[in-house]
Length: 321
Ligand SMILES: NC(=O)C1=CN([C@@H]2O[C@H](COP(=O)(O)OP(=O)(O)OC[C@H]3O[C@@H](n4cnc5c(N)ncnc54)[C@H](O)[C@@H]3O)[C@@H](O)[C@H]2O)C=CC1
Ligand SMILES: C[N+](C)(C)CC(=O)CC(=O)[O-]
Image (cartoon, rainbow, N blue to C red; front, side, top):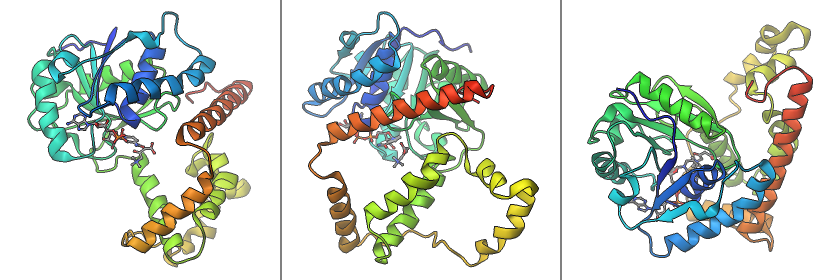
């Protein structure tokens, strides 16, 4: 089977935080977008979110012909996917819901149109179980904000055709993304497995009264967070071993793994822990709205992405290296 990789029409099912991010990215790349979301008021909320993202996309550079007016909102799943060249589902993270939705999407879509799911960690073999032509079904797990962050994890299920994975990678690349093929189908994939470990430890630190939510965020953003935007943990720790590199690093810090510094199982989400986290983050948010904070985040991301791109070029690296 050959799959459609030259895409003109992008279908988006679910238009919340992530769906609207995909839609903004696709519009900025000059595509026609057809969207569907069953919530009352979803179209107005979507158009508002896309408008909020647009200034950042203009700064990043729009493809000629890109326009928010090329977004059409429709009433049914079938209308959404019928003529689509590529389909991306961003519905709530529930196995039963995704299973039922993908049975309907895949039955109505053209057989060679690729279907991606934004799931953060559900297994494609499970939620594509009832799909028609499951060979073209993949996970394309993005990162928020989808319209600026390049990473998309691409994962196949038991029935996914390897050619469909390569085709999906080509499509995501054409949308300016940096696909990462996750070769083994595991819950949480690669990135969320790492983020989840950090999140669990952060909740333990709040629960145990070690630090406030703001202090924990400071511990990330003024230290490792700055490094992580251009160098991952393995290469960073190689440098931490000095000239002797990773072998010396493992000898010196290996014993700490046995102490252990981490708890790993998640803490129980008691009302008191939830209150501490919600009150702590409300204090961090101050009187700024979510939309204001999104624009602030987007501006910072554009500055970081631009600086990294220029610096990599000076050292002979491409941005995707
Ligand atoms: N929020 C995040 O940081 C990230 C979320 N994801 C994944 O993206 C997906 C969507 O998550 P969010 O956008 O955060 O959720 P959200 O709650 O912001 O949006 C979900 C949207 O789906 C709609 N919806 C409800 N039932 C539906 C149905 N049967 N079919 C289609 N749409 C339906 C809702 O009306 C809502 O607009 C999930 O699978 C999640 O794991 C992936 C990466 C990051
Ligand atoms: C919290 N989360 C699991 C939904 C996060 C992601 O999936 C990726 C991200 O954007 O951090």
